[in-house]
Amino acid sequence: MGTLAEEILGARLGRTVEAGETVVVPVDVVMSHDTTTALVAEGMDDLGRKVAHPERGVVVFDHITPAATIAAAEQQQRARDFVTRQGIPNLLTDGISHQVLPEHGLISPGDVVVGADSHTVTLGAFGAFATGMGSTDVAVAYATGESWLRVPSTLAVRLEGQFGRAVEAKDLILEVVRRVGSDGARYQAVEYIGTAASELSIGDRMTLCNMAVEMGGKAGLFAADDRTLEWLLGRGARPARVLEARHPSYQRVETIDLDQLEPMVAISPRVDTGRPVREISGMAVDQVFIGTCTNGRLADFATAAAVLRGHQVAVRTVAVPASREVYLAALRAGYIEALVQAGVAVESAGCGPCLGRHKGVLGPGERAVTTMSRNFRGRMGDPTSEIYLASPATAAATALLGRLADPREVG
Amino acid sequence: MARAWRFGDFVNTDQIIPGRYNVTTDPGELGRSCFIELRPDFASTVQPGDLIVAGEDFGCGSSREHAVIAILATGVTAVLAPSFARIFYRNAINRGLAVLECAEASAVVDGAEVELDLARGRVVDRTTGRALETRPLPLFAQRIARHGGVLELVRVHGSLNGNCRSECGTALGPN
Image 1 (cartoon, each protein chain N blue to C red):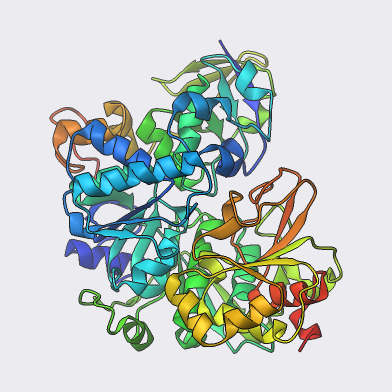
Image 2: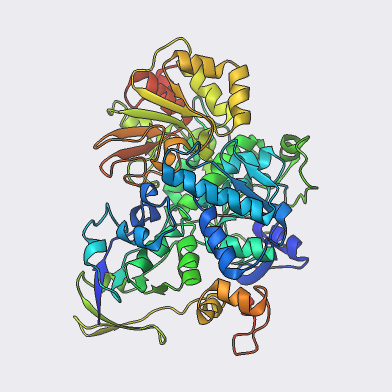
């Protein structure tokens, strides 16, 4: 009996667990990437231990790849060396970790996942308990095959109704974050429930779980269902432990009627400042960016291509698919061609300019409208630059009109 | 006596060490870039033993442990704040940076002289003469802190849940 977080952790431990309890739990997948693996390697060397279960380890190059600087190239050399020395079979270089792990069948429902990246929570979309940690905790997970954590209490978000025209999962999560606050779910799991939640696509579920950390959350969670299993079919994933909450005791329940939502934008530099786009549409914008682990998937490219096909962007626009699989599918569907013809710079798969290191760094005073999850001051470049967070539809409409635009203005 | 360096609410790890400056694991380099954009004078003027006093949710955002390494490299040994983001909190305990939860942290002004007794969790603001209450670490975190970090704990016990012979036990179960 318990919340989905309690059920998953309990199933993994073979006993009942309760929120507030501290447990040491076996870890099914351990992940680190090109800017965190070198520190993980230092921790492992300090410990003098080998990776306990190399087959459960995954190292992903996504943050600054291909390397944009000598320093980044050196970090990647150190990461490659770690992979070789430790005999880790999975070194992935084809996109953002949170996207390519499930694509490669490395995530199964019921898994416990520890990743050296805060957006590891994205994988809760597959019914896995996935959380971000620092490099030392991840080194311990590699070395011992286990991690310690306090079983979190749960904030449930009950979804009802249906999205209206041009309203997307990103608008929903910006509303959730606005209501809960940027630390309102600290140490908690954020579990999505209700009939409308089970209707959402896997991509939408990933967008919702992804931003659990922007509320301070330890995990974002959807119960796995037929949709999850269908998505993973043919990808070689390990057998699923399909679990759901049973007579859960939630610490708080927020109910959201999707019909009441409209396109939202979160104002620089705080993620919990969401408001309807129409209230400030017309705001000047210097750059648009479509991509990231929040919104770089095929459906997001379909949305952007539908808005921009046959037109020219009125402001510089960068698009970065979350993975090579997304890139190829978008290419075959004609989305990439439509975007390139519209004047969009389509870059190779990865985190792109979300970290302010390459592929679209902002200059002094510049303002970007992006599909990212974080709008911290200076994250994309100069400390005086600004980031506004929005959906792919809003970002594309903004690219088309050269100013912040409500997607309902353009179609 | 430590000097208090006052910061506001929601200081994120991008501000502690921006993404453009953390493409290294060298503590010296990370320390020189600590708060480089938020407070450019910090790294060059902070003294060993000084204290960061911050607002709510210190260390939110990215999981980058470089943020803790950068702070420690400046000589700062403790951060006092009403609340911490969870990944930063774990990273700090794992690396031996003292993180003291203190509801009254906002009463400490920038530049205040603060007396720190980390072993007892006692903090006295000498500028106002006020003793500040801090919340003890969760039991498992105390166990890690007693070992001087999680790597040392694993080294000594072979695993996370190996029993300590001493007073700390496993520190598992309800807190």
